Image 1: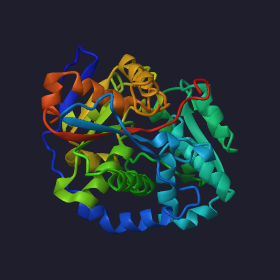
Image 2: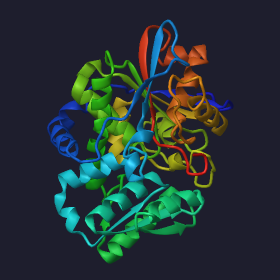
Image 3: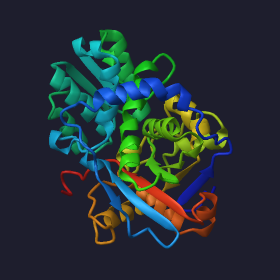
Image 4: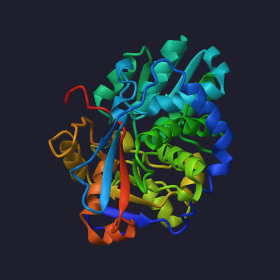
Length: 359
């Protein structure tokens, strides 16, 4: 790990591809079949990334910023929410949903709650941009700013749910709150199914942003289900100073990072991985890296410039995986450690659309 640089990379010594496959297969297929019927469900674009491709490595961008864009969401999170509702349809009869969020999960929960006629309350770190609050309240949800980071928002949401009997619609697991976070992972498998449908051959590597790790775990598990031992090497990217997945892989167990670090990758500013996700990432994740805000900002700008085959508009959080790939490809040591020094077929997930301010 290169502590003093703008990037840190940890190769998972316990990597064991395909382990989650048998666990997820039947329920995953059933949930994904159900959410495919949602009237707003369409494939998001897979774009040839000519900027990063060379004679050996072919790169692609999966633009999840187009996911449910017409619904006002523009991110992947609704896939997880729909997966939970497909598995637990009785939640439609709840009085209120409550959750913690940096922005995107709360927006998806608020969107679903409004469609179901259910009240929603979203607890958020007070440090996230005001726009993130506004994008949730547009769906009729109540937002509560908390003093502290994402872990504090989770604790306050859990206390509210315990006190009032509201449904805790969390996408991050912890002891005593595991069923809904676990079910959330299945919906994210939709992204994998689309990638396999859209690509001429399966990817060898997939770069995924990591907050609490739920998206990465869902991607790992679905690739294991679909491809078994031939699944790609999956690498996460997270903010340099808020990188609990890197810390956890290094320690071999869940680790939290200190609260208080700031990052422009606001939707990835999570101090502790989901324990449900960790059960999958511990063996199924090939590696993890942490990147500086400057690197993420450069990647965001590259995505919307002529360097990409088709302009992709996002935010620093959404560009994290693309930034991680650029960092690996620019460093011969990292390139070798990631297995990108030979022929490869690589996908970077762009996970959200642009801010309202940036367009």
